[in-house]
Amino acid sequence: MQLESIIGLEIHVQLKTKSKMFCGCDNTGEDQPANTTVCPICMGHPGVLPVANRQAIDWSVMSSLALNCQVSEFSKFDRKNYFYPDLPKGYQISQFDKPIGLGGYLLIETKDGTKKIGLTRLHLEEDAAKLQHSPEGKWSYVDYNRSSTPLMEIVTEPDMRTPEEAKTFVQELRLMMRHLGVSDADMEKGHLRCDANISLRPVGQDKLYPKIEIKNLNSFKSVERALEYEIKRQTKLWEEMKAPEVQSTRGWDEAKQITEEQRTKEEAHDYRYFPEPDLPPLLFTPEDIEAARARLPELPQAKRARFIDMYGLAPADAKIITEDKDLANYTEQVISELRAWLLSLEQVEGTEEEIWEKNKQKLVKLVSGWLVNKLMALLNESNTSIKNCKITPENFAEMITLIYQNKLNSATAQVVLKKMFDLGSDPSQIIEEGGLAQTSDEGEIEKIVDKIISANPDPVADYKKGKMQAIKFLVGQVMKESKGKVNPQTAEELL
Image (cartoon, rainbow, N blue to C red; front, side, top):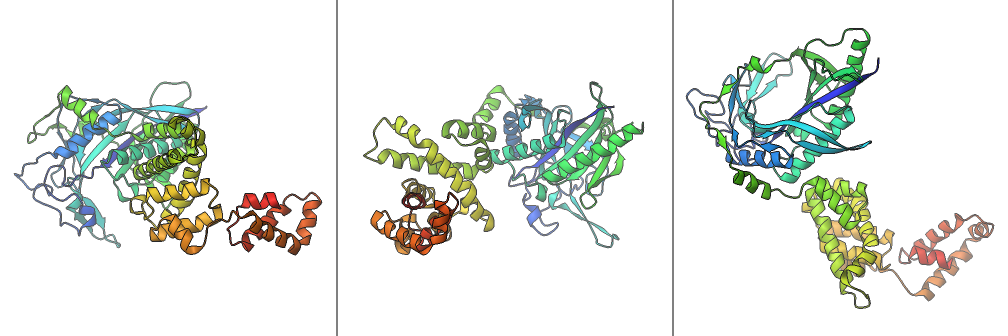
Protein backbone atom coordinates (compact mmCIF):
# COMPACT_ATOMS: atom_id res chain seq x y z
CA MET A 1 0.00 0.00 0.00
CA GLN A 2 1.39 3.40 -0.98
CA LEU A 3 0.86 6.06 1.70
CA GLU A 4 1.10 9.85 1.65
CA SER A 5 1.67 12.15 4.60
CA ILE A 6 -0.79 14.93 5.45
CA ILE A 7 0.90 17.73 7.40
CA GLY A 8 -0.45 20.89 9.02
CA LEU A 9 1.26 23.29 11.41
CA GLU A 10 0.27 25.36 14.44
CA ILE A 11 2.77 28.16 14.97
CA HIS A 12 2.99 30.61 17.87
CA VAL A 13 4.78 33.88 17.17
CA GLN A 14 5.83 35.90 20.22
CA LEU A 15 5.22 39.60 19.56
CA LYS A 16 7.91 42.06 20.65
CA THR A 17 5.59 44.71 22.09
CA LYS A 18 6.95 46.84 24.93
CA SER A 19 4.35 45.58 27.39
CA LYS A 20 2.47 42.32 27.87
CA MET A 21 -0.85 41.35 26.28
CA PHE A 22 -3.25 42.31 29.06
CA CYS A 23 -1.20 44.39 31.53
CA GLY A 24 1.51 47.06 31.54
CA CYS A 25 4.39 44.79 32.63
CA ASP A 26 7.68 44.85 30.73
CA ASN A 27 7.61 42.30 27.88
CA THR A 28 11.34 41.53 28.09
CA GLY A 29 10.94 39.18 31.04
CA GLU A 30 12.98 36.42 29.39
CA ASP A 31 16.07 38.61 29.94
CA GLN A 32 15.19 39.53 33.54
CA PRO A 33 15.48 37.64 36.86
CA ALA A 34 12.58 35.26 37.51
CA ASN A 35 9.30 36.77 38.72
CA THR A 36 10.46 40.41 38.43
CA THR A 37 8.31 41.59 35.48
CA VAL A 38 4.99 40.61 37.03
CA CYS A 39 1.85 42.17 38.50
CA PRO A 40 -1.48 40.92 39.95
CA ILE A 41 -3.00 40.78 36.44
CA CYS A 42 -0.42 38.49 34.78
CA MET A 43 -0.21 36.42 37.99
CA GLY A 44 -3.97 35.76 37.86
CA HIS A 45 -5.01 37.35 41.17
CA PRO A 46 -8.79 37.38 41.81
CA GLY A 47 -10.71 40.51 40.86
CA VAL A 48 -8.16 42.04 38.47
CA LEU A 49 -9.20 43.40 35.06
CA PRO A 50 -7.22 42.83 31.84
CA VAL A 51 -6.76 45.57 29.23
CA ALA A 52 -5.86 44.51 25.67
CA ASN A 53 -2.57 45.68 24.15
CA ARG A 54 -3.41 47.93 21.17
CA GLN A 55 -0.02 47.38 19.49
CA ALA A 56 -0.46 43.59 19.57
CA ILE A 57 -3.89 43.95 17.96
CA ASP A 58 -2.57 46.29 15.23
CA TRP A 59 0.33 43.93 14.47
CA SER A 60 -2.04 40.96 14.27
CA VAL A 61 -4.20 42.81 11.73
CA MET A 62 -1.11 43.73 9.71
CA SER A 63 0.20 40.14 9.84
CA SER A 64 -3.20 38.82 8.76
CA LEU A 65 -3.13 41.07 5.70
CA ALA A 66 0.46 40.10 4.89
CA LEU A 67 -0.66 36.45 4.96
CA ASN A 68 -3.63 37.16 2.66
CA CYS A 69 -6.17 36.52 5.44
CA GLN A 70 -9.60 38.13 5.59
CA VAL A 71 -9.63 40.45 8.61
CA SER A 72 -12.86 40.05 10.56
CA GLU A 73 -14.76 43.28 11.14
CA PHE A 74 -15.98 41.74 14.42
CA SER A 75 -13.53 39.81 16.59
CA LYS A 76 -13.54 38.90 20.28
CA PHE A 77 -11.53 37.27 23.05
CA ASP A 78 -12.57 34.02 24.75
CA ARG A 79 -11.62 32.07 27.83
CA LYS A 80 -9.98 28.72 27.11
CA ASN A 81 -10.37 26.69 30.30
CA TYR A 82 -7.82 24.09 31.37
CA PHE A 83 -5.68 23.41 34.40
CA TYR A 84 -1.90 23.41 34.33
CA PRO A 85 0.57 24.61 36.99
CA ASP A 86 1.90 27.42 34.76
CA LEU A 87 -1.58 28.82 34.06
CA PRO A 88 -2.41 30.80 37.23
CA LYS A 89 -6.00 31.82 36.31
CA GLY A 90 -7.05 28.27 35.34
CA TYR A 91 -7.87 29.63 31.87
CA GLN A 92 -6.07 31.30 29.00
CA ILE A 93 -7.43 34.39 27.24
CA SER A 94 -7.45 33.39 23.58
CA GLN A 95 -9.80 33.60 20.57
CA PHE A 96 -12.17 30.85 19.49
CA ASP A 97 -14.86 31.38 16.86
CA LYS A 98 -14.12 35.02 15.92
CA PRO A 99 -10.36 35.28 15.31
CA ILE A 100 -8.72 38.38 13.83
CA GLY A 101 -7.73 36.69 10.56
CA LEU A 102 -9.53 33.97 8.58
CA GLY A 103 -8.28 31.97 5.61
CA GLY A 104 -5.20 33.23 3.82
CA TYR A 105 -2.14 31.54 2.35
CA LEU A 106 1.63 31.69 2.07
CA LEU A 107 3.60 30.72 -1.03
CA ILE A 108 6.68 28.53 -0.61
CA GLU A 109 9.27 27.29 -3.09
CA THR A 110 9.58 23.50 -3.38
CA LYS A 111 11.60 21.25 -5.66
CA ASP A 112 8.50 21.02 -7.86
CA GLY A 113 7.98 24.80 -8.02
CA THR A 114 5.87 27.32 -6.12
CA LYS A 115 3.24 25.86 -3.78
CA LYS A 116 0.37 27.63 -2.01
CA ILE A 117 -0.07 26.61 1.64
CA GLY A 118 -3.54 27.55 2.88
CA LEU A 119 -4.13 29.05 6.32
CA THR A 120 -7.11 28.35 8.55
CA ARG A 121 -6.82 31.30 10.91
CA LEU A 122 -4.65 33.81 12.76
CA HIS A 123 -5.64 34.65 16.31
CA LEU A 124 -4.23 36.49 19.29
CA GLU A 125 -3.74 35.11 22.79
CA GLU A 126 -1.61 35.28 25.91
CA ASP A 127 1.24 32.97 26.82
CA ALA A 128 1.41 30.85 29.97
CA ALA A 129 4.13 31.10 32.62
CA LYS A 130 7.29 29.00 32.47
CA LEU A 131 7.99 25.87 34.53
CA GLN A 132 11.55 25.17 35.61
CA HIS A 133 12.39 21.74 37.03
CA SER A 134 15.17 21.03 39.52
CA PRO A 135 17.97 18.74 38.21
CA GLU A 136 17.10 15.97 40.67
CA GLY A 137 13.43 16.16 39.69
CA LYS A 138 12.14 16.85 43.20
CA TRP A 139 10.84 20.38 42.62
CA SER A 140 9.24 22.46 39.90
CA TYR A 141 9.37 26.24 40.00
CA VAL A 142 7.17 28.76 38.18
CA ASP A 143 8.55 31.91 36.55
CA TYR A 144 5.65 34.27 35.78
CA ASN A 145 7.74 36.68 33.68
CA ARG A 146 6.43 35.03 30.51
CA SER A 147 2.81 34.94 31.70
CA SER A 148 0.58 37.14 29.46
CA THR A 149 3.25 37.63 26.77
CA PRO A 150 1.35 38.34 23.50
CA LEU A 151 1.26 35.46 21.03
CA MET A 152 -0.11 35.21 17.50
CA GLU A 153 -1.17 31.67 16.65
CA ILE A 154 -1.16 30.83 12.94
CA VAL A 155 -2.86 27.57 11.95
CA THR A 156 -2.32 26.11 8.49
CA GLU A 157 -4.49 23.84 6.40
CA PRO A 158 -3.15 20.25 6.02
CA ASP A 159 -1.58 21.20 2.66
CA MET A 160 2.00 20.02 3.19
CA ARG A 161 3.08 16.59 2.03
CA THR A 162 6.74 16.37 3.06
CA PRO A 163 8.84 17.36 6.09
CA GLU A 164 10.91 19.58 3.80
CA GLU A 165 7.82 21.56 2.81
CA ALA A 166 6.95 22.03 6.50
CA LYS A 167 10.45 23.27 7.28
CA THR A 168 10.36 25.66 4.32
CA PHE A 169 6.98 27.03 5.44
CA VAL A 170 8.32 27.81 8.94
CA GLN A 171 11.41 29.47 7.44
CA GLU A 172 9.27 31.64 5.13
CA LEU A 173 6.94 32.58 7.98
CA ARG A 174 9.88 33.57 10.20
CA LEU A 175 11.26 35.71 7.38
CA MET A 176 7.91 37.49 6.99
CA MET A 177 7.55 38.17 10.73
CA ARG A 178 11.03 39.71 10.80
CA HIS A 179 10.34 41.89 7.76
CA LEU A 180 7.08 43.07 9.34
CA GLY A 181 9.07 43.94 12.48
CA VAL A 182 6.54 42.27 14.81
CA SER A 183 8.81 39.55 16.22
CA ASP A 184 12.43 38.44 16.33
CA ALA A 185 10.98 34.98 15.55
CA ASP A 186 14.03 33.20 16.99
CA MET A 187 13.05 29.53 17.42
CA GLU A 188 15.95 28.76 19.76
CA LYS A 189 14.72 31.48 22.15
CA GLY A 190 11.09 30.40 21.90
CA HIS A 191 9.95 33.50 19.98
CA LEU A 192 8.55 31.18 17.32
CA ARG A 193 7.21 27.79 18.39
CA CYS A 194 5.89 25.12 16.10
CA ASP A 195 3.61 22.14 16.71
CA ALA A 196 3.25 19.80 13.75
CA ASN A 197 0.16 17.70 13.00
CA ILE A 198 0.64 14.64 10.82
CA SER A 199 -1.39 11.68 9.63
CA LEU A 200 -1.00 9.18 6.79
CA ARG A 201 -3.51 7.91 4.25
CA PRO A 202 -3.49 5.69 1.19
CA VAL A 203 -2.60 7.60 -1.97
CA GLY A 204 -5.75 8.55 -3.87
CA GLN A 205 -8.01 8.85 -0.82
CA ASP A 206 -9.46 12.18 0.39
CA LYS A 207 -10.31 10.99 3.88
CA LEU A 208 -8.37 12.49 6.80
CA TYR A 209 -7.32 10.01 9.51
CA PRO A 210 -6.66 10.83 13.20
CA LYS A 211 -3.70 13.19 13.43
CA ILE A 212 -0.73 13.08 15.75
CA GLU A 213 0.43 16.43 17.16
CA ILE A 214 4.18 16.74 17.74
CA LYS A 215 5.33 19.30 20.34
CA ASN A 216 8.70 20.68 21.51
CA LEU A 217 9.95 21.61 18.02
CA ASN A 218 12.42 24.44 18.60
CA SER A 219 14.44 24.49 15.37
CA PHE A 220 13.93 24.02 11.66
CA LYS A 221 15.87 20.75 11.82
CA SER A 222 13.63 19.52 14.63
CA VAL A 223 10.53 20.18 12.54
CA GLU A 224 11.96 18.19 9.63
CA ARG A 225 13.45 15.32 11.65
CA ALA A 226 10.41 14.85 13.91
CA LEU A 227 8.12 14.58 10.89
CA GLU A 228 10.50 12.17 9.16
CA TYR A 229 10.54 9.97 12.28
CA GLU A 230 6.76 10.11 12.64
CA ILE A 231 6.25 9.12 8.99
CA LYS A 232 8.39 6.02 9.53
CA ARG A 233 6.63 5.19 12.81
CA GLN A 234 3.13 5.59 11.39
CA THR A 235 4.01 3.74 8.18
CA LYS A 236 5.02 0.74 10.27
CA LEU A 237 1.71 0.92 12.18
CA TRP A 238 -0.23 0.97 8.90
CA GLU A 239 1.73 -2.04 7.63
CA GLU A 240 0.86 -3.88 10.86
CA MET A 241 -2.84 -2.91 10.44
CA LYS A 242 -2.58 -0.72 13.58
CA ALA A 243 -3.13 2.73 12.08
CA PRO A 244 -3.82 5.45 14.74
CA GLU A 245 -7.51 5.54 15.69
CA VAL A 246 -7.52 8.52 18.07
CA GLN A 247 -5.81 11.90 18.01
CA SER A 248 -2.89 12.14 20.40
CA THR A 249 -0.01 14.39 21.36
CA ARG A 250 3.63 13.31 21.24
CA GLY A 251 6.74 15.19 22.32
CA TRP A 252 9.94 15.36 20.29
CA ASP A 253 13.02 14.19 22.19
CA GLU A 254 15.95 15.93 20.52
CA ALA A 255 18.55 13.77 22.28
CA LYS A 256 16.95 10.46 21.30
CA GLN A 257 15.63 11.74 17.93
CA ILE A 258 12.25 10.11 18.59
CA THR A 259 8.69 11.17 19.44
CA GLU A 260 7.16 9.98 22.72
CA GLU A 261 3.46 9.81 23.60
CA GLN A 262 2.24 12.43 26.06
CA ARG A 263 -1.57 12.39 26.08
CA THR A 264 -4.66 12.01 23.93
CA LYS A 265 -5.52 15.19 22.06
CA GLU A 266 -8.18 17.52 23.52
CA GLU A 267 -11.09 18.66 21.38
CA ALA A 268 -12.43 22.24 21.36
CA HIS A 269 -15.34 21.31 23.66
CA ASP A 270 -12.88 20.06 26.28
CA TYR A 271 -11.75 23.65 26.84
CA ARG A 272 -15.28 24.96 27.53
CA TYR A 273 -14.71 28.16 25.58
CA PHE A 274 -16.92 31.17 26.35
CA PRO A 275 -16.56 34.91 25.57
CA GLU A 276 -14.16 36.79 27.86
CA PRO A 277 -16.54 38.98 29.94
CA ASP A 278 -13.87 41.51 30.96
CA LEU A 279 -12.80 42.51 27.44
CA PRO A 280 -14.92 44.31 24.82
CA PRO A 281 -15.07 42.90 21.28
CA LEU A 282 -12.69 44.21 18.60
CA LEU A 283 -14.44 46.17 15.84
CA PHE A 284 -12.62 46.98 12.58
CA THR A 285 -14.14 49.17 9.88
CA PRO A 286 -13.15 48.70 6.21
CA GLU A 287 -11.24 51.99 6.57
CA ASP A 288 -9.28 50.59 9.54
CA ILE A 289 -8.34 47.52 7.53
CA GLU A 290 -7.24 49.53 4.47
CA ALA A 291 -5.18 51.85 6.68
CA ALA A 292 -3.40 48.79 8.10
CA ARG A 293 -2.81 47.48 4.56
CA ALA A 294 -1.21 50.81 3.61
CA ARG A 295 1.28 50.40 6.48
CA LEU A 296 2.55 47.06 5.17
CA PRO A 297 6.24 47.16 4.19
CA GLU A 298 7.55 45.38 1.11
CA LEU A 299 7.24 41.69 1.97
CA PRO A 300 10.26 39.38 1.61
CA GLN A 301 8.84 37.28 -1.22
CA ALA A 302 8.08 40.43 -3.24
CA LYS A 303 11.49 41.90 -2.40
CA ARG A 304 13.22 38.71 -3.55
CA ALA A 305 11.38 38.79 -6.89
CA ARG A 306 12.18 42.49 -7.34
CA PHE A 307 15.89 41.98 -6.66
CA ILE A 308 16.00 39.30 -9.36
CA ASP A 309 14.00 41.37 -11.86
CA MET A 310 15.40 44.85 -11.19
CA TYR A 311 19.05 44.08 -10.46
CA GLY A 312 19.53 40.77 -12.25
CA LEU A 313 20.64 39.00 -9.07
CA ALA A 314 20.91 35.22 -9.21
CA PRO A 315 17.90 33.66 -7.38
CA ALA A 316 20.19 31.98 -4.82
CA ASP A 317 21.95 35.29 -4.03
CA ALA A 318 18.65 37.19 -3.90
CA LYS A 319 17.31 34.65 -1.38
CA ILE A 320 20.37 35.02 0.89
CA ILE A 321 20.41 38.83 0.72
CA THR A 322 16.69 39.28 1.37
CA GLU A 323 16.77 36.91 4.36
CA ASP A 324 17.97 39.95 6.34
CA LYS A 325 16.01 43.18 5.83
CA ASP A 326 19.01 45.28 6.86
CA LEU A 327 21.32 43.42 4.46
CA ALA A 328 18.80 43.95 1.65
CA ASN A 329 18.70 47.68 2.38
CA TYR A 330 22.51 47.81 2.52
CA THR A 331 22.73 46.06 -0.85
CA GLU A 332 20.34 48.54 -2.46
CA GLN A 333 22.37 51.47 -1.10
CA VAL A 334 25.58 49.97 -2.52
CA ILE A 335 23.99 49.47 -5.96
CA SER A 336 22.59 53.02 -5.86
CA GLU A 337 26.09 54.40 -5.14
CA LEU A 338 27.54 52.34 -8.00
CA ARG A 339 24.93 53.61 -10.42
CA ALA A 340 25.65 57.23 -9.44
CA TRP A 341 29.40 56.65 -9.88
CA LEU A 342 28.91 55.01 -13.28
CA LEU A 343 26.78 57.88 -14.59
CA SER A 344 29.31 60.45 -13.35
CA LEU A 345 32.03 59.16 -15.69
CA GLU A 346 32.46 61.69 -18.52
CA GLN A 347 33.80 59.26 -21.09
CA VAL A 348 30.70 57.03 -20.95
CA GLU A 349 28.20 57.71 -23.74
CA GLY A 350 24.46 57.01 -23.97
CA THR A 351 21.34 57.66 -21.89
CA GLU A 352 21.45 56.99 -18.15
CA GLU A 353 19.40 53.80 -18.59
CA GLU A 354 21.54 52.56 -21.49
CA ILE A 355 24.77 53.14 -19.52
CA TRP A 356 23.36 51.34 -16.46
CA GLU A 357 21.93 48.39 -18.41
CA LYS A 358 25.23 47.92 -20.26
CA ASN A 359 27.27 47.68 -17.04
CA LYS A 360 24.68 46.47 -14.51
CA GLN A 361 25.21 42.71 -14.83
CA LYS A 362 28.94 42.79 -14.13
CA LEU A 363 28.66 45.36 -11.33
CA VAL A 364 25.78 43.59 -9.57
CA LYS A 365 27.57 40.25 -9.85
CA LEU A 366 30.61 41.82 -8.16
CA VAL A 367 28.40 43.27 -5.42
CA SER A 368 26.60 39.99 -4.67
CA GLY A 369 29.83 37.96 -4.83
CA TRP A 370 31.72 40.20 -2.42
CA LEU A 371 28.73 40.61 -0.12
CA VAL A 372 27.62 36.99 0.09
CA ASN A 373 31.02 35.28 -0.01
CA LYS A 374 33.34 37.78 1.68
CA LEU A 375 31.57 40.41 3.79
CA MET A 376 29.01 37.98 5.25
CA ALA A 377 31.85 35.62 6.19
CA LEU A 378 33.50 38.44 8.17
CA LEU A 379 30.18 39.31 9.81
CA ASN A 380 29.56 35.69 10.82
CA GLU A 381 33.10 35.19 12.14
CA SER A 382 32.83 38.26 14.38
CA ASN A 383 29.14 37.72 15.25
CA THR A 384 28.38 41.22 13.91
CA SER A 385 25.18 42.36 12.23
CA ILE A 386 25.21 44.41 9.04
CA LYS A 387 23.66 47.28 11.06
CA ASN A 388 26.80 47.42 13.21
CA CYS A 389 29.25 46.92 10.34
CA LYS A 390 31.90 49.67 10.08
CA ILE A 391 31.95 49.48 6.28
CA THR A 392 29.53 52.06 4.91
CA PRO A 393 27.65 51.35 1.67
CA GLU A 394 29.61 54.23 0.08
CA ASN A 395 32.97 52.67 0.97
CA PHE A 396 31.88 49.21 -0.12
CA ALA A 397 30.73 50.66 -3.45
CA GLU A 398 34.06 52.44 -3.86
CA MET A 399 35.92 49.16 -3.38
CA ILE A 400 33.72 47.52 -6.03
CA THR A 401 34.50 50.35 -8.50
CA LEU A 402 38.24 49.83 -7.96
CA ILE A 403 37.84 46.11 -8.70
CA TYR A 404 35.63 46.90 -11.72
CA GLN A 405 38.30 49.25 -13.11
CA ASN A 406 41.05 46.66 -12.56
CA LYS A 407 42.77 48.98 -10.10
CA LEU A 408 42.44 46.36 -7.39
CA ASN A 409 42.81 42.62 -7.90
CA SER A 410 40.93 39.98 -5.93
CA ALA A 411 43.76 39.04 -3.57
CA THR A 412 44.54 42.65 -2.63
CA ALA A 413 40.84 43.52 -2.40
CA GLN A 414 40.42 40.88 0.32
CA VAL A 415 43.19 42.56 2.33
CA VAL A 416 41.55 45.94 1.81
CA LEU A 417 38.11 44.59 2.78
CA LYS A 418 39.44 43.15 6.05
CA LYS A 419 41.05 46.49 6.97
CA MET A 420 37.83 48.32 6.07
CA PHE A 421 35.91 45.88 8.27
CA ASP A 422 38.27 46.34 11.23
CA LEU A 423 38.90 50.08 10.98
CA GLY A 424 36.00 51.56 9.03
CA SER A 425 38.46 53.39 6.74
CA ASP A 426 37.73 54.12 3.09
CA PRO A 427 39.48 51.85 0.56
CA SER A 428 41.51 54.61 -1.14
CA GLN A 429 43.09 55.56 2.18
CA ILE A 430 43.95 51.94 2.98
CA ILE A 431 45.46 51.39 -0.49
CA GLU A 432 47.54 54.56 -0.30
CA GLU A 433 48.83 53.97 3.23
CA GLY A 434 49.61 50.32 2.52
CA GLY A 435 51.09 50.79 -0.93
CA LEU A 436 48.55 48.32 -2.29
CA ALA A 437 47.65 50.02 -5.55
CA GLN A 438 47.74 47.72 -8.57
CA THR A 439 50.55 48.66 -10.97
CA SER A 440 49.64 49.45 -14.56
CA ASP A 441 53.23 50.09 -15.72
CA GLU A 442 53.62 47.42 -18.41
CA GLY A 443 57.38 47.86 -18.55
CA GLU A 444 57.69 47.13 -14.83
CA ILE A 445 55.38 44.13 -15.13
CA GLU A 446 57.42 42.76 -18.06
CA LYS A 447 60.59 42.90 -15.96
CA ILE A 448 58.90 40.83 -13.23
CA VAL A 449 57.58 38.35 -15.82
CA ASP A 450 61.03 37.95 -17.38
CA LYS A 451 62.52 37.32 -13.95
CA ILE A 452 59.94 34.62 -13.14
CA ILE A 453 60.46 32.88 -16.52
CA SER A 454 64.22 32.79 -15.97
CA ALA A 455 63.88 31.50 -12.41
CA ASN A 456 61.42 28.69 -13.27
CA PRO A 457 62.72 26.71 -16.31
CA ASP A 458 60.84 23.50 -15.44
CA PRO A 459 57.31 24.99 -15.37
CA VAL A 460 58.17 26.96 -18.50
CA ALA A 461 59.22 23.74 -20.25
CA ASP A 462 56.04 22.00 -19.05
CA TYR A 463 53.90 24.80 -20.47
CA LYS A 464 55.69 24.63 -23.81
CA LYS A 465 54.96 20.89 -23.89
CA GLY A 466 51.23 21.65 -23.58
CA LYS A 467 50.70 21.37 -19.81
CA MET A 468 48.40 24.39 -19.56
CA GLN A 469 48.13 24.30 -15.75
CA ALA A 470 51.82 25.27 -15.48
CA ILE A 471 50.90 28.84 -16.41
CA LYS A 472 48.86 29.15 -13.19
CA PHE A 473 51.96 28.41 -11.14
CA LEU A 474 53.90 31.06 -13.00
CA VAL A 475 51.12 33.63 -12.52
CA GLY A 476 51.24 32.88 -8.79
CA GLN A 477 54.98 33.54 -8.77
CA VAL A 478 54.46 36.89 -10.52
CA MET A 479 51.83 37.84 -7.94
CA LYS A 480 54.16 36.84 -5.12
CA GLU A 481 57.08 38.79 -6.57
CA SER A 482 54.91 41.90 -7.09
CA LYS A 483 53.25 41.56 -3.66
CA GLY A 484 49.88 41.31 -5.35
CA LYS A 485 50.19 44.57 -7.29
CA VAL A 486 49.97 43.01 -10.76
CA ASN A 487 46.63 42.22 -12.37
CA PRO A 488 46.62 38.38 -12.68
CA GLN A 489 45.00 38.58 -16.13
CA THR A 490 47.72 40.95 -17.38
CA ALA A 491 50.40 38.68 -15.92
CA GLU A 492 48.91 35.62 -17.66
CA GLU A 493 48.70 37.41 -21.02
CA LEU A 494 52.35 38.57 -20.79
CA LEU A 495 53.52 35.12 -19.70
